[in-house]
Image (cartoon, rainbow, N blue to C red; front, side):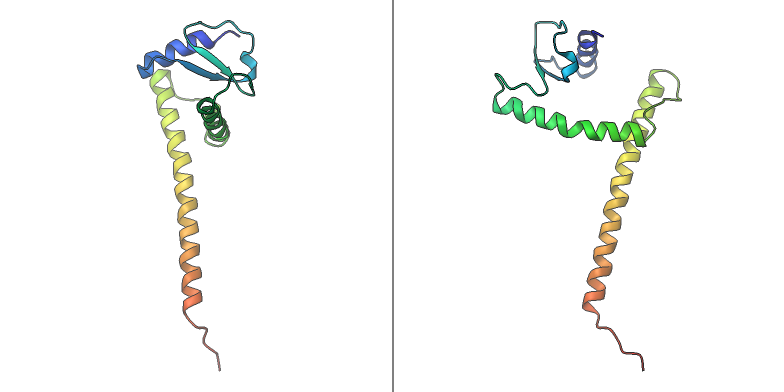
Length: 127
């Protein structure tokens, strides 16, 4: 539906920052939006400057992470009650995602240490 206006109002209220440029999916093409900011649609080619193109690339890089958190870290269904529950669920999902990144980094570090140790210590012959 036409959710862009209310979502922007909520976002500005939460962050305290007034939106000037909005980057949206192609689904928002043709929807009425408040005219106090410029709406950029993904895939748009005309009138796109280098800074706006960078912002669109950054947005495109964040979307898979959001999808992964929703799918793999229980953000698809919230079992906690109220707005506080929504916030707790988001924080716990982000913590789980970051913990997974940390575990992956530690596994790579352990592999590098073992590899370095096996390369520096000569193999002994068993007689």
